[in-house]
Length: 329
Ligand code: NAD
Image 1 (cartoon, helix red, strand yellow):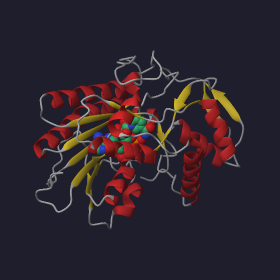
Image 2 (cartoon, protein in one colour):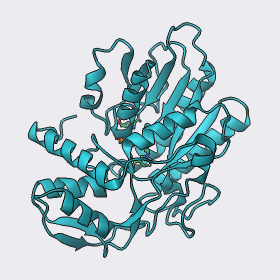
Image 3 (tube, protein in one colour):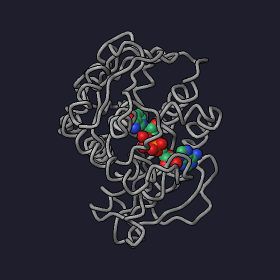
């Protein structure tokens, strides 16, 4: 790894104060790297990275990636682009902003990586497959996305970002790797992000009815955050650039009704399940084919859903007790 002016290799994590990004910052610091976290705190929180504030290897830059970063930067070895709201509730609040973060923001960061000769990992998403017509989803499936629907700002923004990444790679300008991330859960998810795992856990802890959309027969597969972070680092680390996107997710598929029942078992205060209307363009099935990740990275998830849910529920319980979910950034 290149580190001309620094005794330690340097990684920049855009979106590093978010749910996944903050765990990635922790993992990189644990590898004794220097970490520059760039975040505008749209959905990220200072609390997520606060434990790193006193670590000399950690630097926080508050900036919006849709604009070029003004602060002088040391040599960069790795650049992870995780900057983008990820939950439908947050990415639909400002759809144009979501699209611009994914397009202009990704372009700015690719250009930064080009100037520094840094390797680049793009956090893409299973949403590029839209409502998939094949199952499970392999990386060579081009997707079934509605380009004008309410989710398009995110789905099409991420697809455009993949196109940009592929052009920089083809032009030989940046060594880019694309991770297509499937549903991930764990500590530091926002309680108000509206996604199913955090919804069910928060509702259970509060003794409120557990709401699921539709009849609950739609499927999802849930990856624990430490597994995902291990996959992102493995993708960055591999000497052989995959040149194609790599799915990172847990292939254990369950219905959302089964998930709600698992949460009911895990949390004693959980209440009954109620069914709500299915949102527009909600995908019916999601399950990654991870053969590429296994073959090229030697990666597969290790944390069973039951264990991951227990760890996540414990974290939510503790953070609620210290008033963490009061909307404070
Ligand atoms: P998150 O919302 O917790 O984190 C995103 C971070 O990006 C936040 O800290 C936010 O403040 C920051 N950000 C947003 N716009 C920005 C901008 N313009 N400039 C600077 N920072 C900005 O989401 P997450 O769940 O941690 O997701 C991280 C990445 O992984 C995202 O790119 C998301 O699309 C992708 N992803 C996540 C999942 C998942 O299940 N969590 C699934 C697929 C893809």
